[in-house]
Image 1 (cartoon, rainbow, N blue to C red):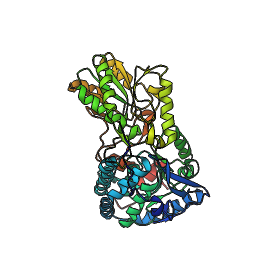
Image 2 (spheres, rainbow, N blue to C red):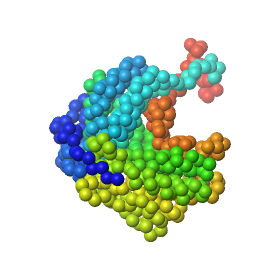
Image 3 (cartoon, rainbow, N blue to C red):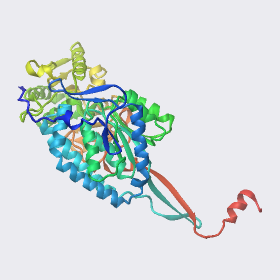
Length: 511
């Protein structure tokens, strides 16, 4: 099961790349002014790879000022001109794909094969999508809806967008925040997670190198309490977009409300994986392991709750455990590694705590332990399958963000769908069945922003991502996210070219 691999000498030399600092403001790297430092740690080894000065409120103010100054010029370009810039941006990203893959693997502990095949290509595809979308933002048709007046709707950029991204997919989340915002003509200040700033900084530099004007894309790397809250509450920030936990999302909403900002929230998830008794069992087992372990389970759409109809339940548990035991943990840069570490020892210990507490009320079928040997230095945790927990138990209801799948049985379709809906979240789900009518019912009745059928996890740039209920509101990716970053203006004018005396008389009489 273990595959430690051999650390490669050409990991990403982060300390050299970002010697000028971890803030990207008005087109250049600078050092933070908070007076405090933070370390980027390789979660596979526990070693510090980059230490930088954190952003303070002065850095946030400078970034917002740069974005505000750049806004009129960027918003004033034609859609075609912004599209051309984004096409150049996509080309720069493609040229630097390997660099991005290595940096993402280093700071996150993701297997290099995952960043090469998923994170980086997905980001390039997103950029290409929004390059095209920039030319296709439309309002409603013009028409005469009131006498001699013509009305039409304009879609306009909002202004400066302040965004906060998480540590689990730092490159892709930077792209999901930045691309629709700037394609629509806005400028942006992004705060990445302190643990994983490297690829966000590289993304901003690539935008500048592609010819996107200074100040359009800015990065401030600081703490959520200082830099993040100041960004959300800043009076010159017109919109806030946040991805992260539901608890922090509530705090973001509270701060944003004070200045009546546009708000976009993509929050936690607890995705159900519903297997009906006519499903292809082998396909469901492989789908569950892939869906639960993607990015070491640190994915808000990861399969975390498998509900399996009683006739397939024991076989599903047995085969899923057996497949999990073949997953190879190891150095993210080693070719044979399937699963890397969690983001930190703190996160690993948090996940382990959930599993240890579950032993008193559920069955830990496989995993549930920290590996020994060389892997113990990193934040590794074995793939874990937990069975027979109660629906109202902590491990079923709470978001773990780790390589843990909980399996519960259900008796009939009504119960399976009811159990799937029985958490506060509603981000993603999947239904497994050979019966099109059964699957279609599940897609209608499961409360989630995305429901896969006979699959779990795939996303595409053309389709939206976002949740219901405690999973937030607003969409990432697709034309729907593009529209999130615009405001609508009704324009109405008089076609008669003379003063409208009748309106005046109605209100004021003859004067």
